[in-house]
Each structure stands twice: as C-alpha cells, then as structure tokens.
Image 1 (cartoon, helix red, strand yellow):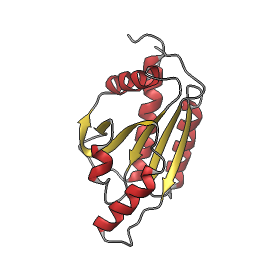
Image 2 (image 1 turned 90 degrees about the vertical axis):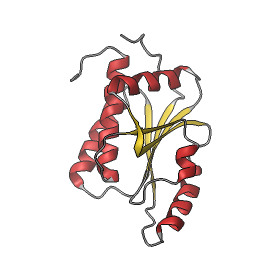
Image 3 (image 1 turned 180 degrees about the horizontal axis):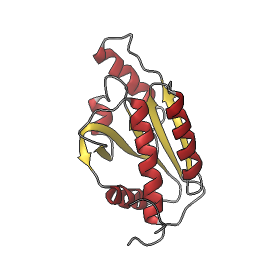
Image 4 (image 1 turned 90 degrees about the horizontal axis):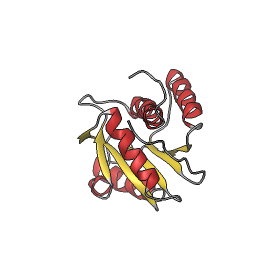
Length: 163
C-alpha cells in the first residue's frame, strides 16, 4: 500500500498528443476521464498537428520541434511500443515519485502520431513506456492512458476502483 499523495495545486499533467480526436465515442470517454482526474490533479491535453503530408523522417523532425515547445521543466514519459511495459501499480508509483520530487513541475506524457515519436524525444524522456504489445491509434492510446492515470490516483489514494 502506498502512502497517501499530497496533491499540489501548481502541479500539472500534460498529455501531448500528435493528431486530433475525431471519434465522438472516444471524445466522450476522454471528457469523462478528464473530469475524474481533475479531482486529483490539473490536467491538460495539447494537440500537435499530425504531419502525414511530409515524408516520415521530415514529419518526425517537425513534430519533435512542436513537442519540445511543451516539455520544458517537466518529467517526460514517452509512449512507444518498444517502451517498458508497466503494471498499473508501477505507473502509480512512478507518478507518485514524480509528484513528490517537486512542488512546482509538470508530468508530460507524449503520444506520437502515425509515424510514432522521434528517437530524440524518446532518448530525452525520463521514461519510455508501452501500453501494450498491441498497436493503438493515438486516440485509443489517449483514452487508455487517461484511464491508467485515473487508476494510478485511485491506487495512490488507496481508494476503491476495479483492480
């Protein structure tokens, strides 16, 4: 059992998402989990344009530039299929440790688009995680991540949820 987490009002979770949300059913799920998470932390989603009109190497470089504008002064967690698989409890421990490391910071989760994330983004992240061996669209990855962030707070606060 984890010790209760102190929630600081100046701490924020950012989710940097390459691509837009298009599916209404996912938008509804995202809205629901954002509402739930906001009882524990400030959270925001930042949309980065998906640059599929460019060749993949150029798109990744340009997306990297856009992502870097939003990841200063934060603990960065990149999502990648080659990342470390974590349990929900492991993610809760990571989030808790990031929260307790500073009262004035941000945790940024970075979700790539159709071409994934640049090697520089992954290399310069504090952690690279995989949600699954399966591949998800950026929209599904966002919804799954939000559920896992919410679950993490429930674990940290020792509150009941579906374990």
